[in-house]
Length: 96
Image 1: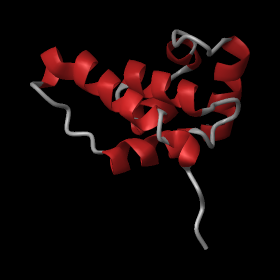
Image 2 (image 1 turned 60 degrees about the vertical axis):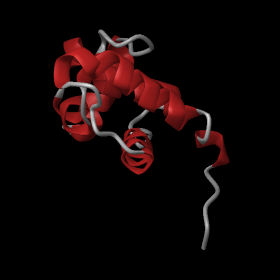
Image 3 (image 1 turned 120 degrees about the vertical axis):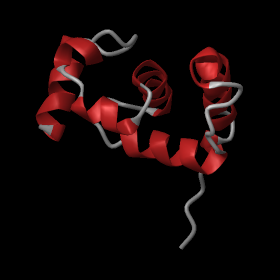
């Protein structure tokens, strides 16, 4: 079975631009993301309550990795644009 991800075609290049522009000074000329890795990370975060592809990109951009997103406390999550106290609490409740 094939699942179409045509909607992600415009999002993945944006995620890669975010990555290379934002982390260039921190980790060198590239942060090593590939389309496949970026796509999988965004997809994984979309399983969290209230998280779509754009918010998943913001979370990755702000926190740096899926692991940091799922281990972040409510206060840290709520610092990301689009995540309020309620959504942050729902995310923490799910990942516990």
